[in-house]
Image (cartoon, rainbow, N blue to C red; front, side, top):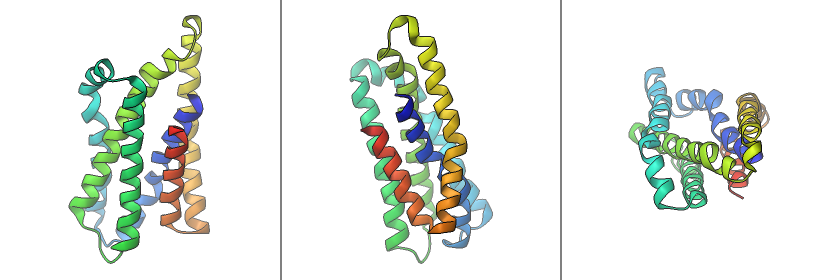
Length: 174
């Protein structure tokens, strides 16, 4: 579960340092519109918070996590498809919706993973240690994700970053 947390968090944190630059330079967005697209992710993070309890009580925890990660993967693949097929200019509402959906799916997956799945997979006397371990792996992703993305952008391009982010999210699903 800690490795799943690392990979899931890395897949999102990889986009933080490179996506604004890509939006402004390759897609022609202004700094304000790029900031709005990035802020949509932050708004999306909090939207599913009110529904987590309901979803976890009415559906299996694993299913909620899996569907949230699948939504993340589809969202990332949508950004990849959008970049490779419509690379002439970004449609601002599409970018904002993509970032919002990615944030909502990531927030839901993170809440389910941290609050229920990690706790459910360990013995009751090890729950505190399990939560600490999972949290620290998430913190490692804060440095590993952007570092990986910046190296990939130097060696390749933004499309590669998106594909690696999809790979990390898929690996966390597995």
